[in-house]
Length: 604
Image 1 (cartoon, rainbow, N blue to C red):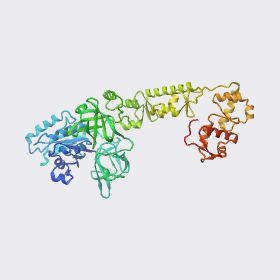
Image 2 (cartoon, one colour):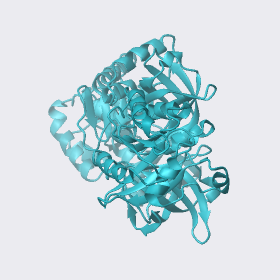
Image 3 (cartoon, one colour):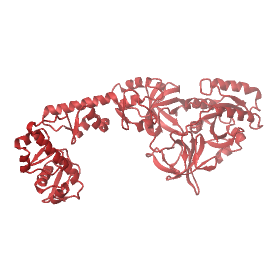
Image 4 (cartoon, rainbow, N blue to C red):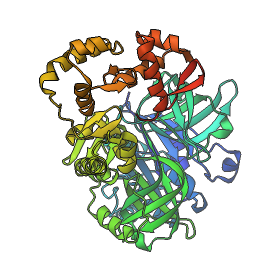
């Protein structure tokens, strides 16, 4: 069944609540104070089914100027609006403020309803004409107009047909979109517990699923959907666009209030500052510095830094789940007026720290597309995880990267930055070899310290692409395998034996039989093809690291005998190898016969 949500708008006492009651038979003024004064103070809710079968829910907003914040909270999540002007009073003060709010929020679907037509039938045409002129530069410029008398019931059938036509033109909601339900009420029901209500505009709510609840005091917390209702009917799932009542487990009712949001876990960026583009309203460089920013049902103190008339940075008093394309309404709390509407084009902008950063940012924003610029964001950071780009609203799942962006696993990497890192890495290695021709190379830790922090996940790939090699935690120029002349065949035999049995070092007579004397072994050691230990023990260069991996599996500390057995070798080999590991800081003696592997072993 197709469902829709429509907000009312218009000046106080122009008959919004009476009109909703005439259409639905439901009273939207919930508070005793509202009913006693005949004045809508907070949001009211009602629903009905149109003759076409469309289900429609109304969010009735207050029209008094003192409650404009409540009115914006109701308008901001409604895809369509029913704008009310009384025939006998005509266009009034709050009519203009609600018009400005509708324009700032970018609402493009709705209709104008001239109420109390029975009181001033001769003014209906002029009232419609004035409304059309007032909406000439907004999304409602072509909105249909209907005259009604809620008291007499005249015009209501025509209004229902007009509503049907308007709602038929509203784009279909995104069922698979990222869930973000802005909360307009939080309360407790006896026997059920905490309930949050709001207008579901995208995504799907399912009973039993876990969500995050945002808050200005803390990071988002996990809550669970205990139950769901819409229009006082329980359901297992809710789809947009619909009014949702969500029974929550894991949070007290006192911790749920208007302006918070229920969001899908891990898929939203919690923004504290956003760069925006003016869509309508006053030039941003002439706007007040201190503002209230409205998004969904949230109204948050904000600070504005203008980058000319069309762009600005807005710093928020607390984090909000925002993405590229979100619309903010800016309001001047001092003068009680709507400043205008802006679109978020960067929800995670770079810090402005150096002289001239503001001017450079102004130029960048002026050339940035409305949908944001993923290439600029990747270039700005060097590398960005694709899931972060999705949180920012800059990339959809499965999206192809733009030019000059390289995909490395889960990362999108700026190719020019990557090439600069590779060049810097080569320079580090070359400088290290100039200082010490016998160096083992530059340690991975030193490389990570020298390169940009965002380059850390790509060290191995950088080594490969830079034509270098990574050997036992050190990066160096590729070693040319030194041919040992007449001893090469014997050395190959020795290497094969030690590859198969790493700690089965040959005895002196076995080395002699291979014609590997002191001169040949010294040459092999210079070529880094063997390591020589006291007592004539010869092993491959990889033996110490292999030994550490094996010894680390033993109960700590371990004895020499336990080490010998684990390494499948003799005391002749085990003792000089263990002493070597002690000197290199890879193991530590606990007492005369016990050692332990250091938890954080330094590079050899």
